[in-house]
Image (cartoon, rainbow, N blue to C red; front, side, top):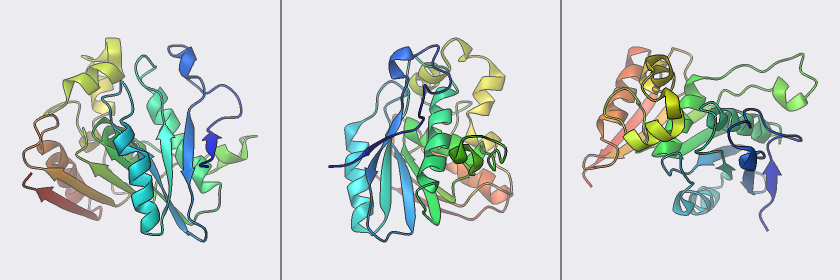
Amino acid sequence: MNRIIPLWSEIAPYTQESPEQAQPSVKEFAVPGSRGAVVVCPGGGYEFKAPYEGDPIAEMLNRAGISAYVLDYRVKPCHCLAPLSDASRAIRVVRSLGYEKVGILGFSAGGNLCCSAATHYDAGNPDSPDPIERLSSRPDAFMPCYAVVSLCQYTHIGSRNSLLGAHANEMPFVRFFSAEQNVTPDTPPAFIWHTSTDEAVPVENSLLLATALAKNAVPFELHIFPI
């Protein structure tokens, strides 16, 4: 039985728009002796979480000797900061379990969430009464898979509208969730892949991210497959 770990001991932040999603969680796929773990973010356009991008991916990582934690994050209708809050908290929670390295991986809209977690993070609050909040939310690596990197250009409009809601056409919000606009030299290393024929999420998303990483001298590996 895979353990379900609630992210918060009480109600999660940003619940006002989605009270029925008040307790996000991670599903544990632990490998005994594993020194590293990956938080897995399924896609689904910020409307749902695709099952085939969750548990099967965790099981694949397990076969490579890597522990995995599938994130059940909040989706539409929710505050636009709720999914990022869930992803950041998941990294802290997994890190609290004793792993030396914690990465994050995501597909499509889950890839947007993965990128947001890798570009909007903090070192933790040393004065927090919650020991988990004292830990860093910066992933040690991120792995966007055919990700909706940008909400500015070449985007997936459904993901943008579902995440931002009434703010979908307000540029400060759009830019905040466009990873290529938020890369810095401190952004963690990335493994990026896409297909050149993706009709839902144009390959330019991954190219934009790779360009931003290169400009900031952040190590990355990029794979573009023909189909």
